[in-house]
Image (cartoon, rainbow, N blue to C red; front, side):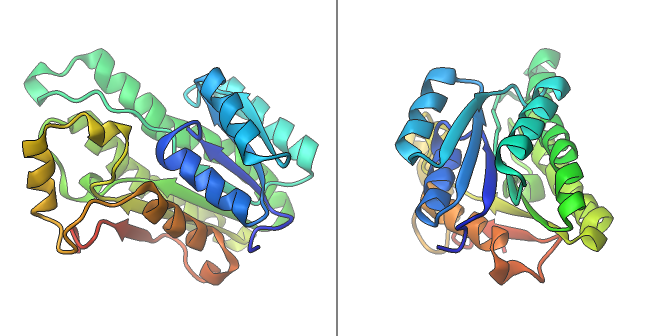
Length: 243
C-alpha cells in the first residue's frame, strides 16, 4: 500500500494507460482524482475504482477548467501528492498532408495540457514542499516517427517540459520524471494493420508488445518513495525498442 493516504491526480483516465494506471494506484490505497473529456466513461471508471475515487470532466487544454479541477481536489482532499499527465491524442498524417488544425489539437492536448495541469498543481505541491509529477511521453519523442510530426513534437516537448520542471521545483521537494512507452497494446495501436504491428514487433528485443500494466508499473515506481532521488529522467518502457 505505497500510496495509502496519498492523493493522486490522473488525466485521461477513462481508458487505456490512464485507466490501468488509476487502477494500479487504487490497489495501493491512493485517493484518486481522475479526469477525462468523456464523462460517461470517466464516471464509470471512477465508480469501478471504488469509494476513494472521484471524477471530473475536464478538457486539459483549457486553463480555467484545469485550475478549477486542481483547486477542487486540493480543497476536498487537503493536499495533492502525485500528478500523472497521461491525456493524449493522435491525428496522424504525413507532414505534407497534415492539417494545421490537427497539429494544433494534438499540441493543445498532449503538451499544453500537461503544462496547464503542472502549473495548476505545483502551486499546491510547493506549499507542502513535496510532490511527484510523472508525464507520459513516448519513445517516438526521442527517435521520431514517419506520419506523426504533431504527436512526435508534442512528446519531445513533453520530455523537455519534464526536465525543466525538475530543475525549477527540486528545491521545493517536487520531482518530475517521464515514462516513454514503446509499442503498447492500446486502442491507439489496435487500429494498425497486422503488417505495421509486425514491423514494430521486429524492432523489440523482448519480442512482444507492451501492456498498459507495464507502463502503469513504471509510473507507480516514479511516483513512489523508492524514486525519491530520481528527477528529470525519462524511463523507456519499450522492451528494448529504444536503448
